[in-house]
Image (cartoon, rainbow, N blue to C red; front, side, top):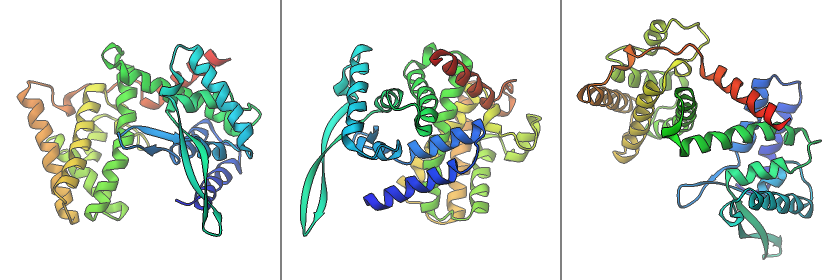
Length: 302
C-alpha cells in the first residue's frame, strides 16, 4: 500500500466514524477499525505497528512532535520495568523524494503495548486519542490474559478465546474466499457446515434455538470457554486444511469444514468430553463481560 492509499484509507475510516455522535459500541468498532487496519504481521508471526503510520492515524502532522510522544512512551515503558527495545524497535524506511532519488527515514516497529503507551502519552484533546486509550488498554489486557491463561477465571477465558475467534474467523474467511466461497450467502452456508460437523448435524439456527437466544444474539457470545475452545479449534484447523490442501470450489470447501468439525467432535468423544450442544449456556454474554471490563479500565484510569 502506498502512502497516498494509506492516508486515504485512514481518512475514510475517520470521516465515516467521526461525522456523527457515536454510541459506545460504535466508538469501539471505529477504534478497532482504525488500529487494526494498520497492523502488520512480521516474519516471526508477531503483530506489529509502524510509528509513521500510527502518527497519521493519531492525527499528528509533524514527526518531531510525534517523536516526543514516543520518547515519553519509551520512558513509561522503562519505568514499568520493561525493556523499551523489546517494544520499540528502530527501523529504516526508504521513501522516494522524486527524480529517481530515495531517502531513508527513521521509523519504529511497535508492539501493541508500545501503541498503548504512545496513546496514553498522546494529546488527550484529540478524540482519536481519547477513544484509543480505552480500546488499547482493553486489548493490551486481553494479551496479558492470553499469556497467563491457566490462571484465568472462566469469564476471562471466555473473553480471551472469543477474541481469538474473531481474529481467526477473519483468516478463515480469507482462506474460504481463496477456495471460491465468494458471496455472503455462500459463506453463511460454509460456516453452517462447520457447525453441523461439530454439533452432530445441528445447524447454526438450531444451536441458536437450543440456547434460547433472541434473534440478534450471536451464539458465539453465549458459549462457555470449553465450547468456544472447540469452535476455535474447528476454525483454525479448517483454515489450515483449506490452505494446505489447496481446496478449490464451494462444495469442496463446505465439505472440508464439515469434516473438520466432525473430526473435532470425534476427538471430544474419544477424550470423554461433553458434546458442545450439551454444554451449559452462560448467563452473561461476551458483550456484557466486555462492558464490565471497559468500566473497570475506565474507573482505573480516572
